[in-house]
Image (cartoon, rainbow, N blue to C red; front, side, top):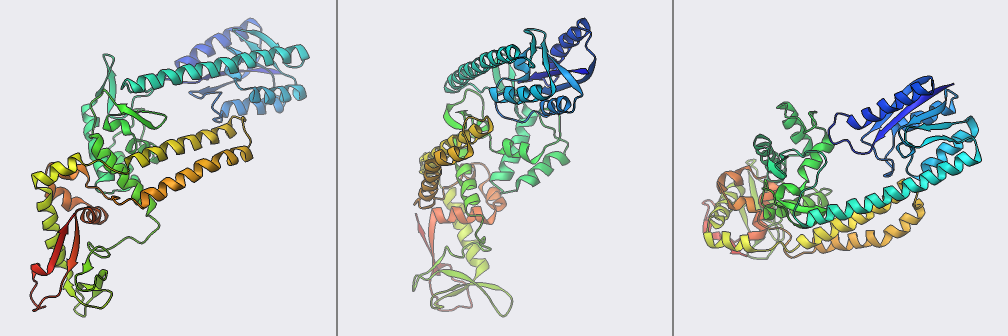
Length: 452
């Protein structure tokens, strides 16, 4: 029978597969020295053996051995083949049924057909597991320390930035694109697939030189590093030492708005500016929209029919009042210094979700059973539910987006979606519609605005 060369590299920073190429060169030399008949060369590049992520070539290798096509696996070191004892168990079971020898460049041969060979493999596996876990602990500690120092650690260049002279700096042309797509998604509420199409239609490629997929777009739009925020395991640690694309206050406002949109996405969206927001000044009934006989729309009191006003002039008056309010320096200063009262809740929720995700990983690496993880996850799920309830019941659920307070406020307001305009109005004011004597002529005095 023949031999299979197997190579693996956990992390490939260059994208050039240099790590597996070096392994392959040494494995071929070993095969030549031992006169092995190599029938296949398999590689899992940029895939860890400890995270539980499927290794396609590893699975193919096992199928080769099970089919009787190979009785020898050539590796640079046994830890390239397995780092987890669960993988060694699988390899050993296959070896006992079909026969298998591991020939390695660095650690000699391991004959899994014999008890002594299996013991040697187990010892090597235990050592590899220990080294892997210890290395992971060191890396985590180092990554956290860097995050606390405001450093941005990345193995693959993120879109919009690069390392230059030991510092993380913006790539000007990509930073401009980033600013555009972030505003499209958050300020204009353009969906992710439309952002993906925008990038691909303009032949703007990922840092890996490939077209954008929906997962890459999701990661791009939710990367808090673009706001100059240093994070560790998805939790904010502090301020980063690189130039941000968007300021942190605007980012937090965007994230709050995005979370609320997601949470409320199962409900029917309002179709008009003031429905459900405005109230009747006479009976406090909720104002909704009524279709008139002339096919025009009016706001009317849903409780007793006390008032009825043409929708368009009311919307124009309220919108103009919002714009004047947002251009008042005192108001701008007040909102700039106003903290987002629910930001800490979103941070706590992200931390709880990260811990929940960690529990799920324990299933993948065989540490815990699914039942054990479900039990351990119950308190975390309960906490996430409580946080969601706190966010939903917050008195200040809608804050003024910071980007609306700078630049051309009118143009930004005009570009805002209906949902975002309604959120701003809820935050700024109460709208009351009163009766008026001559209903044929619009009277702005009958529209009462009570500022928050």
